Each structure stands twice: as C-alpha cells, then as structure tokens.
Image (tube, rainbow, N blue to C red; front, top):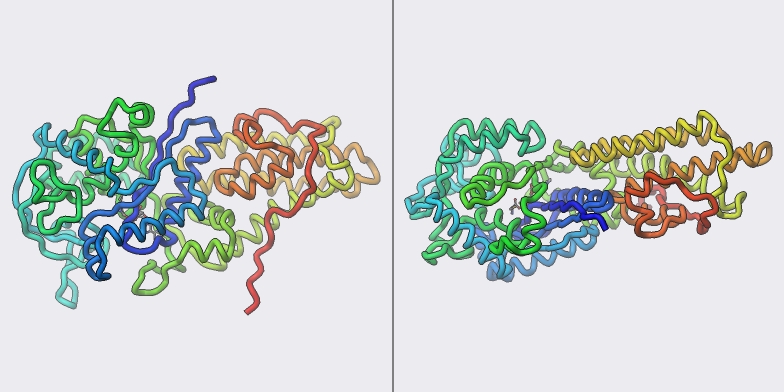
Amino acid sequence: MTEQTPFYVTTAISYPNGAPHIGHAYEAIAADTLARFKRLDGFDVRFQTGTDEHGQKMQQTAEKLGVSPRDLADANSARFLAMDDKLQIGYDRFIRTTDEDHYAASQELWRRMEANGDIYLGKYAGWYSVRDEAYYAEDETEVRADGQRYSIGTGTELTWTEEESYFFRLSAYQDRLLELYRTGFVQPQTRSHEIASFVSGGLQDLSISRATFDWGVPVPGNPQHVMYVWVDALTNYLTGLGYPDTDAELFRAFWPADVHLIGKDIARFHAVYWPAFLMSAGLELPRKVFAHGFLFNQGEKMSKSVGNVIDPHALIGEYGLDQLRFFLLREVPFGQDGNYSHDAIAGRINSDLANDLGNLAQRSLSMIAKNLGGAVPEPRDFTAEDFEMLEQAESAVGDYRAAFDELAFHRGLEAVWRVIASANRYFTAQQPWVLRKTDPERMATVLYVTAEVLRIVAILVQPVMPDSMARLLDQLGQPEGQARQFSALGTRLAAGTELPKPSGVFPRYEAPEA
Ligand code: ME8
C-alpha cells in the first residue's frame, strides 16, 4: 500500500443560538465536496465541523428564552447535526466547544501564549458587538439617527464595555502577519488584500478575556475570567486532533490544517488572530484560509427580523439534495457572494441536470439496453470524431482537478458541462438511432464512446452529487470502490460489462400544483 497524503479541512463552527440556515448549509456542502474530492483523489482526509457554544451571544439568547446556555446549545447543536446528516456531510468529527477535551486544549493554548510573554492583565474600554462577538475600534463605528452606535462593517449594535481583561500582544505580530499574507495564506485575493490593508493600518492588543459573565472556558489561574469566545472557538481546529497531545497520532498526521473554510465575515479572526495565537504558542500555521462569499435571498440579506431566512430542509424537500448541492456550487463562483432564487435553481435543474446530463444518459443507456443486450459494446475503429470526443473528456479531468484544488468549484463544473454539451452534439450528429439500421457496428462504437464519456463525468461529479452519481455509476456497471476513484479515470470502460436496466437520474422540476 502506498502512503496516502493527509488532508485536513475544517468549516467554521456555527453558533447554535438558533436554527441553521442556508448560509450554514452552503459552507458545509462546499467543505464536504472538497473532502469527498480529496478522498476520491487518493488523499487521507480528515474533515471537521461543529458548533461554537460559548460567549455572550449564547448567554444572552438563553436568558431571553429563559433556558440555560447549556440547554440552548444542546437543543440547537442537535439541529446543526441533523442538518449535516440530511445534507450528507461526511465529517470525521462534529466538535462542540462544550466537549470536555476542548477545555483542556483551549487552556493549554492559553498557557503557551502566556509562557511566551504574550498575555498580560489590563483594562478594556471600548465598543463590543455581541451579535458579532467582536471588538471594534472607534473609527469602525458610527452613531445612527436613533442615537445608538453601530459597527459600520456589519451594522450590528454596539455596547460600551469597560472591564478588567487579559490582553494578547497582537501588536507584536504585525510584521510577521504581513509577511504571511505574501505567501497566499488568505484566499481569495480580494480578501487577502482587505486583511493586509487592515493589518498594515496597525494592530492593537486584543482583549481575550471577559469577567462580566461566566459562560466560557475559565482562564487558567484566574477563574474569575472566561476566555473571549474567539480564543476558544479557534482552538477547536486543534482540539479535534488531540491537542494538547502534540504526539497524538491525529495531530501528527493532520496538523497543520490544509484549509480552514469560512465565510468572509469572519476572515479577520482566522487570518489575523488565529495565526498570531499559533505563532505565539509555537505551533505550525494552517496552509490556507479560504473565505467564501455570502448567500443572499433574491439580493437581500437573510435575517430573522426580515423573515426571509431560508431553511435548508425546505429546499431539499422541494428540489432534492443533489440538486441543491449542485446549484449552490455551480451557480455561485466560490469566493463571491451569490443569490438564491427559485427561478435560478429550477432553471439549473431543468437545463443542466435534466436536459443536458439526464437526457444524454437516458438516451444512450436505453439504446444499449434495447439494442446491445444491456452490456457495454466492443468499440470498433474510432473515427476522428470519436477520438476528439474522448480526448475532450479526458482532458477535462485535469481542468476539473486544478479548479477543485483551488476551490473554484463552479469552474470545475463548467469544464465538465462543456464536455456534456459536446457529448450531446456528438450524439445528435452521429445519429445512432439511424445507424441501428444502416451500420449496427458503428452504432455500437458511438454508444461506447458516449457511455465512456458518461463514466468520466459521473466519476468527476461524485463529490458534488454523491447519490445521483452513484446511481449513474451503478447504471454504467461501475461497482463501489476502486472503479469510482479518480485513479480509475486512467482506464476505459471494459467492453462486455453488464449494465442494469437504466432509469432516469434527474427528473425535471415541475412546480407543484397550486
Ligand atoms: O461566525 N451565506 O458562527 P456563525 C454564507 N461561531 N455563509 C454564511 C451566511 C450566509 N448568508 N451566514 C453565515 C460564527 N455564514 C462563529 C465561527 S469559527 C472558529 C467560529 C457562515 O454561525 C459564516 O460566514 O455566525 C461562518 O463561516 C459560518 O456560516 C458560521 O457562522
């Protein structure tokens, strides 16, 4: 057996202060797709997701509901878990920051930063957003007509906070961070520029503990304080590998992480605070932080007060899971903001899935079933058109892999759908239904080429639409395991392979009767 290269991917851990929404689903789907892609490409993948359960926002929400923060976290963390299961998110660990091992990890990270001389006790006086769990400098805030102060960047309400607090010497890390950004640590580029320009403006030391509430990880040596929620939240990426035991098998195999997948609103925490904490603690830095864009509902920001928050379960029920996964990754260039709308998703289902891929599979496989005894035919001499078709499909593999490795899912899918479009043109031009009478051998070759293109497409698209592609691969006589790995792309469909009776993979979307 060859040693597999390890690959560690994480999502942000979500605040379980309410139900998950489509933005959470989007991130989970993207990370799951990346994890599946790397697994199929021969990597030893570890994939972590979970919930971020401490902090003032959780405590305040619980108070409003008259429950304990722990009960609130239990109830909503279960809803995130249920969403992940419904979305078929293949995580290796679902971490909760209230898990016992997480306390030990967070406290050890703290001790290491303290031992390095980066933590001191002081007094914090400034603006805090409970919604964002973030501190803002005066020039990042504005007073609005209602007399209240808000964050300019996120629009959330701020409260003046003045208390004894531990500080982290973030200011000492400016040069090292700027150096780090030159290595492509933050993706995409636009986000990297934003972060670098923020850091160039100068960094203030960061308040990293709170003493006015107690829902958090106690500060080592001073249990009057709990850690600032982001300190413990970021540590989750280490906890899941067995930290503080840096000799643990998982830790040695998977740290540093290959990519932290997060939304753009939390880029600062991951690209500024997190690498500084790790440098201070003498730990290796993750290789990449990738900040995806936001999903909007027909151009509008989703919010509970506007009442336009989209429930992922409802979408799955209406359109189907694979259809939703495909839509989100194909429609929105990953890294940019995107829009969800009924028309857009229904359009993609009917054109890309039902018409382009579904029909091609149905037409070709049913001809094989009817005319060739349901087995992959032996191809005869390939014509120039056959070679061209096969070469196009085979060369899309490289484009797809390169795109997915850069998390440009939309580009990878575009490359595959160009092949599908060509295959439809090829099929129409070759007219196998005419050849059936005039030249059955030639018909068999055309059907072979088409089935081979479908096999390549199905193998490649598995990470995005696992169920549908599994069904298509079943119909192409490709059993689970080796035959479905990317390494099988170097072979060709074996003549004589028995195929089961074909059935449609992608039904058209029909609006339900009013
Ligand atoms: O930020 N579109 O948790 P969270 C796309 N606990 N992505 C969205 C989105 C939208 N409309 N809304 C939210 C937190 N997200 C912290 C993370 S990590 C150590 C701690 C994304 O529940 C958001 O950008 O507010 C983030 O990556 C994730 O969902 C969880 O958001």
